[in-house]
Image (cartoon, rainbow, N blue to C red; front, side, top):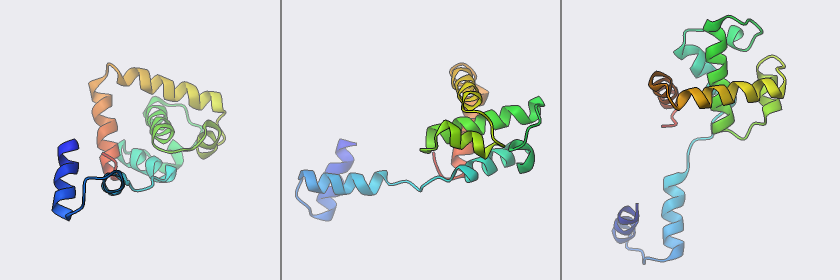
Length: 128
């Protein structure tokens, strides 16, 4: 990263100052703002689940697992509160959202398929 900053300051003909570095980092670190609904849509598409089902109350594994992943991604990639996330998923309680996100977080530590799925979903909405 340091080398890239030095090269960019030289390329732009700017002195190597805190202001120049901040400007360069600001340009490099700006990411598209992610909408929670966009995350839910991407997860539903990835797992071939209807949007109405992933947001609904059905408790079958084929729907619950993607729902939990969507909750996990929203919690980690947005500033939405547990309550906000719960409301997005049909009024689920904040403790339900917390349990779901923790479950996915723990499973992702050892499940390489889940890690790959999460990575693929992130790429689908422009967040590598």
